[in-house]
Image (tube, helix red, strand yellow):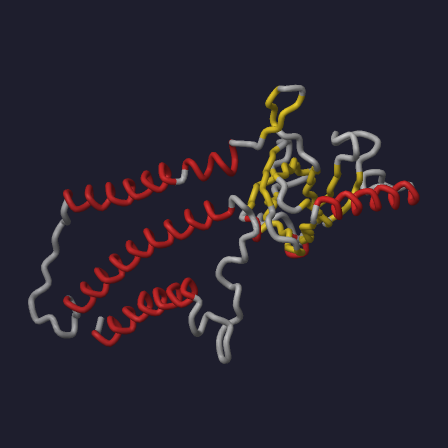
Length: 278
């Protein structure tokens, strides 16, 4: 194949590893300085109290697969360099292969995947199974969602529980693509789909939940930094998928209550809601 091409192939893992190292360490050219790439291209700022678990899991899997990538790339380079057809004067010999090597090569990836599956079980349970609870009438029950998010082509429809704390009653507040959540408070969101598969993605909260038609699902988090953040759809859901975006505003609880009361008053004056078809 030519040792020139072997060296060229070796540049791929070298540049790939250097890119990841510079991004993780936040050094040039990945630090947003002069003649460098923009910042925040790696992981967006985490504002979820539970988000560090996802970040740690992501980093661990990246390092594990990175070691495997370096090992396999090095092996490929060594074979390309050693068995260069232009320099190898020995006659070509064909072999059937090694049954033992095939078994080992099958067991090692399976073991790595099994290890990852076991390692991430606690993170999965925290994000998908251990829904927050609250005490009602001296009983611990699952925390009620304060907003229902319905995905439809191509928008997020929101229905907030009113003063009674129940979704589906007269005092609900209806909005589109405008999610507000209270700061430093555990919140539960009910998620549904009206038409096709969507994926409710809050990058800064490390929350991503596929939205399946016919299923009612829940996600939860505790936002710890006020600001305005993105809501995106992470599932290809049709021609308008690219524009299925919204915004999430994190604000102190008193401001959130004032905002919700104001939206309910505006809704009452207009006499229309996103669900009314008017």
